[in-house]
Amino acid sequence: MASTEGARASWSGKWAFILAAAASAVGLGNMWRFPYLAAKYGGGTFLLTYLVLVFTFGVSLLLLETALGRKTGQSAIGAFSSFGKKYTFIGVLASAVPFIITPYYCIIGGWVTKYTASYVAAGADALADGGGFFTNFITSNVESYVWMLIFMVLVFVIVGLGVKGGIEKANLFMMPALIVMAIFIALYTLTMPGAVEGALYYLTPDFSKFSPELVISALGQMFYSLSLAMGIMITYGSYMRKQDSLTSSVVRIGCFDLGVSFLAGLMIVPAAFVAMGSGEAVASNAGPSLMFITLPSVFVDMQGMAAVIGFVFFLLVLFAALTSAISLTETLVSIVQDGVKCSRKKALGIVVAFVVIAGAVINAGYNVASFIEPLGAGTSLLDLADFFSNSVLMPIVALLTCIFVGWIIKPKAIIDEVRVSSKFSAAGAWTVMIKYIAPVLVIVILVAYVAAQFGFFSM
Ligand code: TRP
Image 1 (cartoon, rainbow, N blue to C red):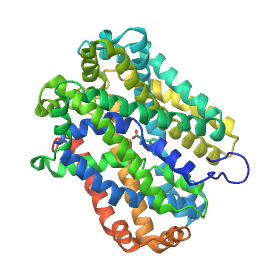
Image 2: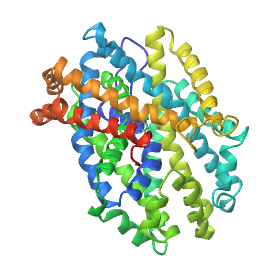
Image 3: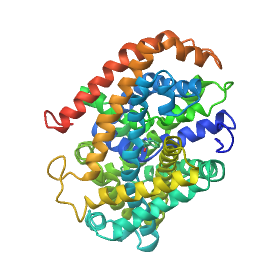
């Protein structure tokens, strides 16, 4: 793991880097977004498309970012400006993304914390009332803030304990626990009557569902899930040692993230299928409410096991959310520390103040300020923050990064860095990816997301 003392932090080894990158990648995106996208886009067809994208586009960009970080030995802003002052803005844009994501990520983290606690305190029935529980909670003027703060305090305490003392230990405990719980829940849900049929719906490709819209959604999901285009992987790469292979590390990170997304789908899609009776019903109801409204009503049918399954499920989602929020917060701390040139402690203080205030403002969008509907009827401030960071800023940063490496500093600079520690036989294909394919795909995502948001077509 990275140490905070001395000149420049470095990982204690390749596995420490892989675990930290995986902890950052595996989060609410895998648990909450991936399953509903898979359900919506015909199961297996989405899985296959996603798999192909991760191992072409995703891994190529992961490699680019980590190699850029290791080559320059700097986090995002410094990495870009080391090639000339005029490129600093790319690093600044990349660093803006986690500032927008962290506050609203902690709000959803608060919802998950509330659900985990409620399975202990109130039992499974209370949560399975068809949506009333959820709506009352997020619209409350006090409770929703309290749970957001509880989640934030957990994150700040772990980050405050430092990279070695807090973050490393938290990951080492939470990541394996998360995997074990996910396998347990997936196996348990598969024993429910009708669940096997749901699993088949999830796994069997239905090629009639294949569409440009599916590819665009899969691409957007991949960016978010792999934590690409926000400077994090550049920072993590800068902590890597010259002898550790970049190629095998990024492939492992891709496998890990994909594996957890796959498992999450295997827990959630068959369960939703049991509740709704058909693949079509799941597809048409697939959305953010799948986790907070549909699942509790599935769990309640498990009778004696209901509260146990509900608790374990939300605890594992909580672990996923915590490890990602920790990584996001750590990134903010390092940006502030480098930018303001202050101590780590002071930087953490600034970050805490920012995240709490911004979180409270965004959360107000569900209650005291719910009259603000920034993207049209029924939308919230959280939707706006999510849209702006994921659908606008991240594609722009990805595009600029590919142009920067593909056409300005030239791919050879990165290929040479990769070859310091391992063979790179796919260098030719990688170059084509970064120079031509990736920029075109990214422009397509950007245009499609913005067009969909403003109602030119629906996604
Ligand atoms: N990848 C995380 C997830 O799947 C979310 C995320 C996006 C993230 N960007 C990040 C996490 C940066 C940590 C750091 O939920």
